[in-house]
Image (cartoon, rainbow, N blue to C red; front, side, top):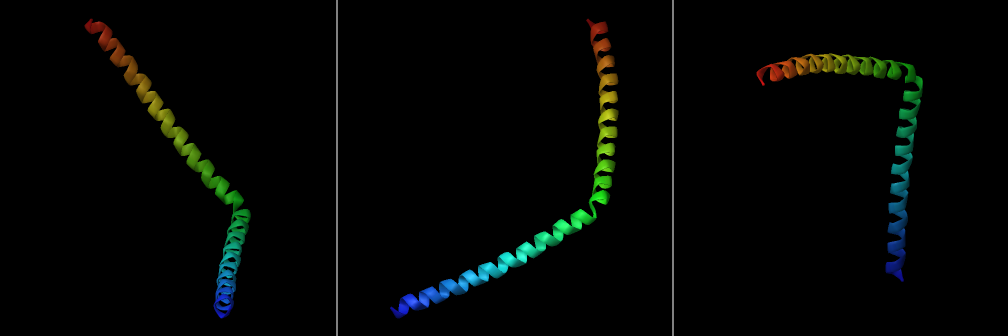
Length: 80
């Protein structure tokens, strides 16, 4: 019986520790959400700049591939 009481007390103590950790995690997540909410416009601008840079790189790569592809096909056809 005493062992059972000790075990239950330990279980309650462990549960309280997990609950405290969960509360800390909830506060951290809430803080992160508020920070994002307050910074949303800035984050969207950063993402837009990043997307524009990627689009420019894709366009440049596409142009170089198209230009290189046409030359190599012409070279190949003239060799045959």
